[in-house]
Image (tube, rainbow, N blue to C red; front, side, top):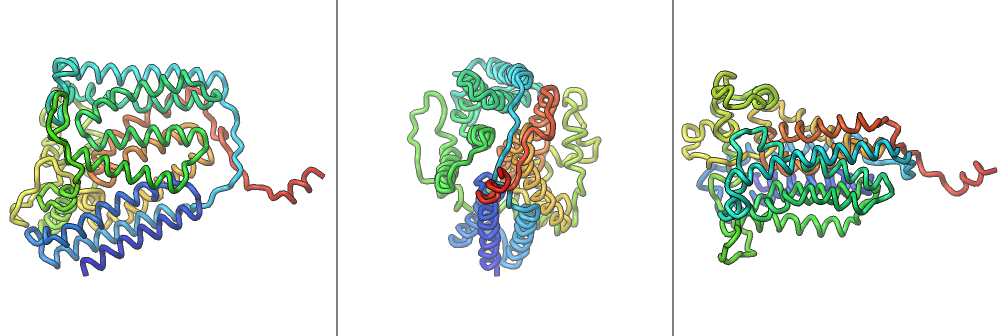
Length: 444
């Protein structure tokens, strides 16, 4: 039954992707990039682990069936939510030219926002002694005791998106495109030298979608599929060789990435996520939105000002794997690895139990609605959707906590700048394509 549920999950994702692409002809539809990550997390990984017997030391068959039933239902709800908004779009795009005022505002604000990000990143590097010291050991980087400084480095992403929008809106100005690219260069350095899959994914998606979507163009399905497979391999390659990639390393790298999927340890995303579900169910302990509220209310307060903020909020668990690793030893007889994440469906199960299903349906709708607005209204919606797509690796593979604060931090500057630029909802409109015969009648 466990394997049947896995194949059923594959079928749901495959049908959802086929339906979305057939209706939209858009490789940037949310199911086209979230679907493959769900297949990796909830199908390929458990199939490989099951085939090698790697799950037997952690769960019995009834537990696996229970977990995969939840995963299947969650996948189904997200897919249905994504396609419930509708995939078909009008074919003729009529875009109003961007005003010179809007272009100037986007460039100036983009430079300011991006500079904040570069300054924060540079300060963190200087704090540890410079580039050589920051990247001379595996999985390292810069650091600052102030969380606002650490998070401010993310401002390079909205800086890039604001400037690239101006570059394309001005009829494509290479100087602006190069300037925009310069604001992502520090993140490229960090992603490459620290083997971090999250920033690497964010960089690739931001570059690709920021370029194509502002130009109202899309790569072909074949090109996008090939690029997606290469990106997936790159992410697995970075994680596999994480301990061997740093400045001055002379260690040999391997292209064999199978251990990331097949190695049965308590840090494996599927195993850890399944353990989180079972532990919460056996203890009958769920958060009912408190962890997510803490991300908005408690997290912004500096730890130096309120060192016991999570304890005072009633969530001391937040300091251990964001509250996802509680009760493993008592209920399962083994401990989840420190620093692990359970993935989207398990994280929502910890928060809402069976109510995670309507939440997943709603999340699918949100992604699809923002995607439609990129076509129908353009403007800041393109940048907003690009950010949501870039964060989708955290969305699927980690926790909502990893998404919430990043989404707020990256989205708010973009909305404020576009408002200053005079954005109106009519910036981009679309009308149904007119057949040649109808054009002749209109002309007559």
